Length: 247
Length: 98
Image 1 (cartoon, rainbow over the protein chains, first blue to last red):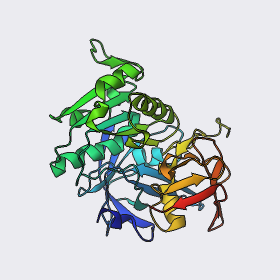
Image 2: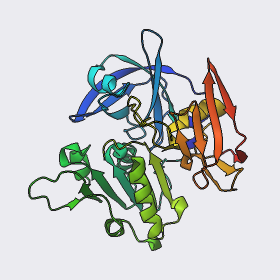
Image 3: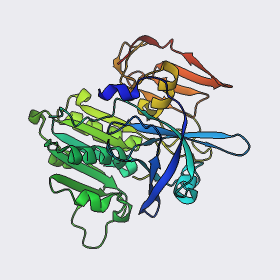
Image 4: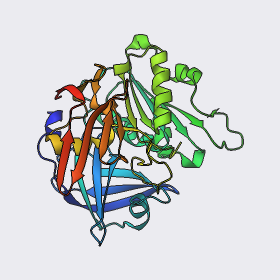
């Protein structure tokens, strides 16, 4: 049962850092070897806890970047004056230990088994991370559910998982670049608009479900736009990570 | 509004902007002993219902504050005092576990 993995007591445990992959100059994926990991669902989180020598504790929640069945991984964007992300993206090395708990969450999740509704995925900045887990799960499970991705990023070099996303033959990926566009860019520029959403989103008549993740303002804008297209609010799942990071 | 010029935080940005219930999945699980972001809450102020994941969450308040997305009414406050979580659910008229 998919639900059983999240039942029961949530305990902090020690994971070992495996491979680290630089996705962009400020974004790193960290693979984690977690003893006894019960498995996760696409879209779930894990919490990371760092304890300083003086006992000060900082906790952060990160979306799991890997698909169910793959080694656990998180993708972290460095926030220059943050407390946790500079350590995770700059100092953590393979073989280091990291304290975490999870998986957590059960709302912003997608299960390949039995999924039939066409997927609309909308990401702002590092909001792509849980959607990447969904896309990988869809691919690995052989799900035939149609999927489209709308990804808003500041600039092309800040697009996370760019090669991987472009490698999906059966997923239409639409980028919009909000701050800078490379010379000759023929894609979309600027923030998402109602017109762009209407172009990318499946028609309501196909009974789609949408997952929207990103900075709070991006999510409000995209979710309102989808509801404006007639999407029932409960078919628009949202996850906001605040701030403006990554947009 | 919480102050916005305090030192920047990261992860789900804890910079004073509103997050949602997904960001406190771990804390809710710790408090309730099970997954709660998909639990359906009923606002005691306006009667709106919806999953906790869709509620407005502030992490920078003194403690964690969960507000109604429709009326901004206070739903849940969780304050960690030493090693104990103090949980105030008075703003919820009902809470149906998933």
